[in-house]
Length: 155
Image (cartoon, rainbow, N blue to C red; front, side):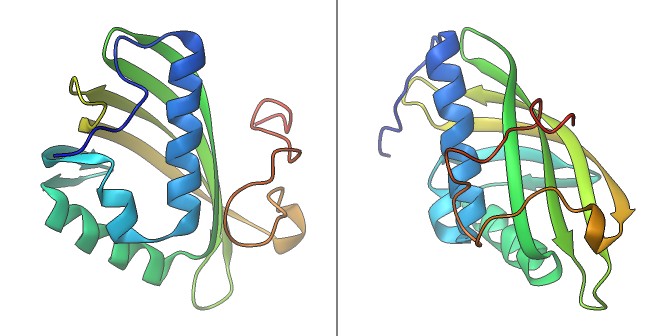
């Protein structure tokens, strides 16, 4: 098991750093890399799906990004305390037919002492949008530092 700083207990600065690190990893859309931020026995609830362990996380993310094309995500710290962080997020994607969506949600995270996430609880809603209503405009990959966040975008 490897360490994944910053470590709990979190401060506002380290909690925001953890949220941005997660955003960056998910925007990279590499299931294996993303899974390394979680404990080997991490427990997830994502919408109505329940997962346990890195292998299940990798399989889930492979399915997700095969369906959610041109995925771009922004996370924003909501609150934190001790070894827990809550974030809100939105991401934009399109399906194979070309319909665009903006998915809104929140996540509750719990970390072990090594800074690995051992629990992730995500609630998400999808909103179909016109391509002209998209707000996340950057090349695939990491969101540029000068791109507005959720609050700046009025989301």
